[in-house]
Amino acid sequence: MPKVSLSEFADRLSQIMPLVAKEFMRQQLGELFKDKVTLPQLLIMSFLSMEGESKMTDMAHFMKVSTAAMTGIVDRLVRLGYATREYDAEDRRIIKIRLTPKGIDLVKKINQQRRQVIIKIFGKISEQDREDYLRILTQIRDILAKEEIKP
Image (cartoon, rainbow, N blue to C red):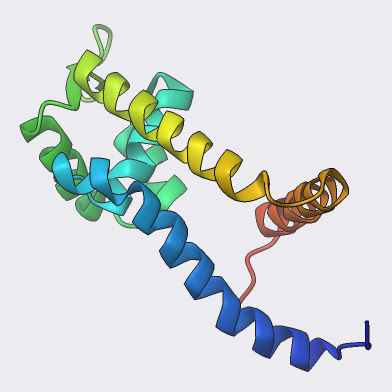
């Protein structure tokens, strides 16, 4: 395989990534559209699924948005019955957000669907290539977690 310069790599990746992301999302959109859940709402539901509960400020930090923007996302999840607000017994100024059983079920359903899509796609790729892909994605995740990359 011929060597690819970093600039060529960036150009090719810039063309490929949106198509890959679009197709992954298209495979999962049935559940999202059926339940009228947006991608930011799904990200927050997944975050809550991992954390159990969270304060608005922590979710806003996770999403890198203002607490006002996060309030809008959470309001919609509460209205749809996927999340609840619970006041801290010690300090009523602290409000924790938690998934409802309906929210937990939707996250599980979407995770199962995502898993099936990944198995379908990556089942057509060699085990070595899958290991390499996972290793590289893990490196990218670690780099992104350590530093905020600005254009």
